[in-house]
Image 1 (tube, rainbow, N blue to C red):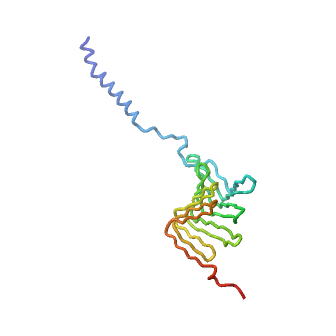
Image 2 (cartoon, helix red, strand yellow; image 1 turned 120 degrees about the horizontal axis):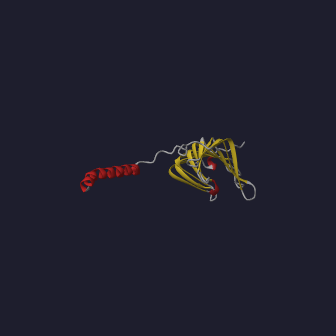
Image 3 (cartoon, rainbow, N blue to C red; image 1 turned 60 degrees about the horizontal axis):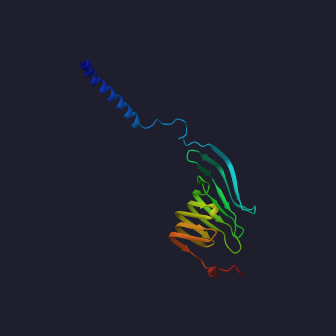
Length: 197
């Protein structure tokens, strides 16, 4: 009887090894792809011709944003804006407008990246001439009144013209820093021809 058990021993050992191999193979295989749609980059909502406003505690408008389309994607919580126009209101100065081809709103809604043909316009006020800034990218933190870019930019105010690469702007502190390769054309008001008689 012991001889019969010894004869089955190699077969039992092979069966155990085969089962162990199958178990190991299943453990090291990648899980099958999930087919519930969670990995797709499809929008969960689209708003055409949208408008939104943020108010100050006194009820005045702090800033507003409008655009031709807003698209939200649930897989990465990103929000894309087409043809956005952002307007920041400040009672001490003229409104500042930012226009671009598109914008990307952060997941928490705290920052906006304006992308493509970005134009910033501050209208004339008091004795200040209008100011226009052009670049291809602008990162804005609206609630902190901060804006920055690492791209080339041009800024024009009356006859004065500035070219630079990179900028940081703090509206509250009224502080503008141009980061590199700055070229300035400045025309002194004294040198401007008078429009007298």
